[in-house]
Length: 198
Image (cartoon, rainbow, N blue to C red; front, side, top):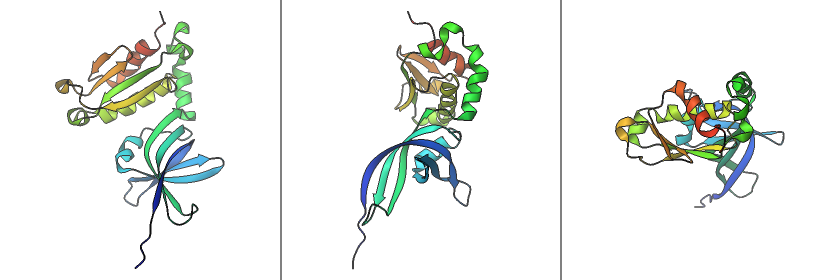
């Protein structure tokens, strides 16, 4: 009996997010990506689905890393995403940026932002205490402040401050933050990444 042999290749695509495709039960299944005038449907890995549901806006420019599986010919293939990175904001986020831009003083414009990384704990205590919600809030705030090209978020293992979960570290500088409130996120990031350089 002949068996069907699938081959897989890694891929990395950049394009415009145009929406999701849901399963009949309402849960996310796939992401719709516009690339060179064509719409691709890319299946989402299970771990990605919850984190993306409220983290992307139509029009966002995204980078997708995943695997393509094909049999026989390259025309018969399926794409599956394991990582989605927002590269720039869509219209909705740019409107927020324009409305909030006045909150950033002239000497703290995005053009003088510092390169950085936010290390966000993703282990059990932090996950139970809202690290996913914090991740989404960080994504939105980074976008609103115009930091999407200079600040990235990296999920980490335990940061050894479980009782104060959720926890994150702002890099460079190793500034530790525990259980930040949503309303304080913008000020935290503005102070750390948009403060005048010495």
